[in-house]
Image 1 (cartoon, rainbow, N blue to C red):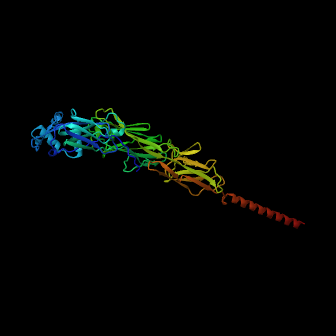
Image 2 (image 1 turned 120 degrees about the horizontal axis):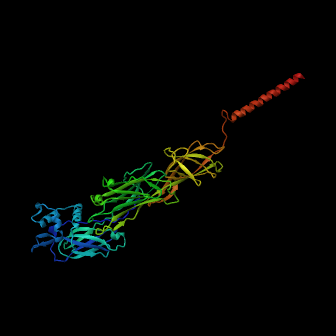
Length: 499
């Protein structure tokens, strides 16, 4: 598939596991947390990072025993967990045991997301002045929640594209490497057929061809964003189709393997379809779980014909939340675009002297022998999206220049069967076969079309004699002449006898 990745903003969670026995002593207020970014697709520039202490760390004189004490702002959080007495003698011990037992990135993400709402005042902060690093200084020894507030005045989408909560321990100098993934929204075409479909596909195209009245299947792929810190979240996909398409209104939404269509808000308005996945649904899935939207649309007679347009373009984009503290702030991804092309047949009817022949009647069929109905306007035929597929509706006639133009066909093989030849010309005994083939570049643009032009030759010639035809007339005339000759001979003989 010719895929073009589309960048969207996503909250990304980077978590480091706490190891109590490896935390060395340090002087108060001398610890640092350095945040780094190695993803060129996003920038830290202008982002403000804040560190919130979850645990204070103390140690004995020999620096061999470490003790973790819950920071005041998070005491109520741990109290609300109703931790088991098996975890320790007091709340601090229970909290330490509880956090120490958390393992795996997904579990740590869930913990950071849960505890985020209990944060108090920040212990330190820094605003990055470059794309790749920033350091929070002046921190006491402890275990911290590090939160990215984003950029107050971002210069571009990339500068909004990192929003992290991280857990780390000043060590005394801790480093957080942002796992700044950039989820994508990607629209592709899954196929062309004679009926509506919303079946998902592992493959797809950025550009295809189709015939008027056929159905084109589409698929939009995205991922569950990082919802860390959000109490609500906007996730709305808008798909805008060209006038070439009439939505089949059969959208299906899947998260992972779950069909969540009935829980989504789907609105069709003219050529636009919007799908909103509620926060109550999307929050139940882990970050990066695939979100798949499938649907189809019928190609209408309003479709543009190549090369008058570079393809009937259709695009989708995603509107999403991008600020935990202000849910009214949203961002929209760049559109993901696909193209549908329709082509023409150009037939010239001539005799064996290359003279143009008007009035030749043909019937148009597809490769399966089905009639393709057409309408005539301004000297050109166009595939109809309303007429029945009958022989009469599929009949085309060469004009005064011997030309037949038929617009609105996709790639493939078609036949023109002659049902009436021009006067004095023989009817073709075999159908005329025409195969349309197009080539595309890596961006889905058509670079050439072949096979769609054809010259059809009719030969002149009288019919052989047949019963009731000209042959009978000839033989009848010949018989009369013979009879007249016999009469004349008889008359002459009689005159001689009389004389």
